[in-house]
Image (cartoon, rainbow over all chains, first blue to last red; front, side, top):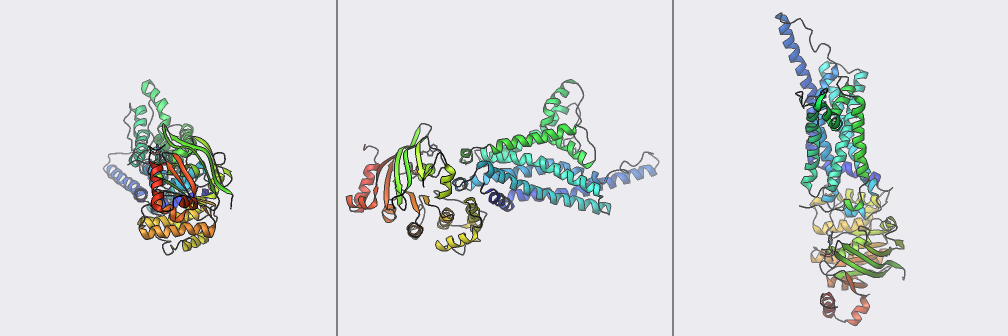
Length: 298
Length: 245
Ligand SMILES: Nc1ncnc2c1ncn2[C@@H]1O[C@H](COP(=O)(O)OP(=O)(O)OP(=O)(O)O)[C@@H](O)[C@H]1O
Ligand SMILES: [Mg+2]
């Protein structure tokens, strides 16, 4: 079908020139590159406190960080992906479909022999490649910063784990790209196009995990997935809404990928994220021609 | 040439209860420049949107360049060019980047040589690497024509091509339209509410009033019947008045 590559390249080019995704991108990469530093500072502080305590004869316990894996420094990145990464993904998705409506070029596209599913598929592929490139840079930054802290290259095993983590992050973030694209197609106004997926994101990331685990104080910003309660009404709620708390599912998968461990079922986590992506794709690629032509109010 | 480029039979479009186009029966021969006249809201844009397959009709048939527009819209899309009313582009892309994209969507594998040629033809060289966001209305319109003719369409649809242009811009565009028809043999369908536009460029005219085609003839026949422009203006106003049956 004509135009897949053309649309894909046009998307990447346009995305590179837009201001808002750029700002988020810089914040995201900045956070990622300092996150290992933050992890390392935590390590040093804890170790020095532990040494002082032990020297004073106040403890005989081993240093809690003595056996910390080098990838434990990356834990914070998990949170940056769920927070800033997801916002970046939403903005990328929204601007991808809103771009043609805002610039009123939709009719120039649709007066040509363009299949809507191919067209949107090309846009998504363009965004996926762009996001992949961003995560590759984030991965490389992380690798380098850990290597600097550890004063030596990461082992091949750890490198693979790190790559696996960013791979999982890519799939997770694609869900938000798709949600953003759908919002960019269907919203009546530019502002609601951005606002609606951000509300959806905050529900998924902040509200749903709380519904299931309210019995335990859960730090939402904890990179470790929340521990579900056992028994009772909360457990029942958790069973139902838990799978939709994609942020928690992502933490579970990340923990497994990084080898830092985490509770929760790996199978369920993978299933939830893949299903969410597949459902979004199905809706996106089923978009009707006349939906793309809807006017933007303002 | 007697080949028919555009033929419609009972072509209609309603938006809910609002009838924007009512049973349009029209034939435009290949090689013509057809001007569709009508006041604001007469249904000109609706007609062009139907003929360019952007809108599905609520009734009737249309055949463009021998292709059935409702059964095989992609075949129609391959042979038409379209300049929308108040054309806009991706503002943060350059002329070249915008044209490359639309050229490739029209099926051009390597559009660059063709873009050079078209910009040369339109007398619009030197702006290839400037972003569209900085362009004046007239410059934008020129790029708009360029994107519409890159793939050498058989039928070119222009929706109010001269609206918002200054007198020089209007004259230049008129020359371009006539040139495209003469040099490249394109059939041209243009919308306008300016009578003077039609008499200077078109070979046949139609008058649309409240969604109905009230008049259709060659320009020569029209000028014969109504020898001076002011009377043509009268005819237009006469047809245009909703009170006249
Ligand atoms: N999307 C729409 N929904 C409802 N009504 C519409 C829509 N588009 C056009 N109309 C109505 O259909 C009629 C014809 O509109 P159209 O845009 O085709 O007119 P036009 O001749 O191009 O006018 P203009 O000279 O102002 O461009 C108008 O009454 C308009 O209000
Ligand atoms: Mg109009």
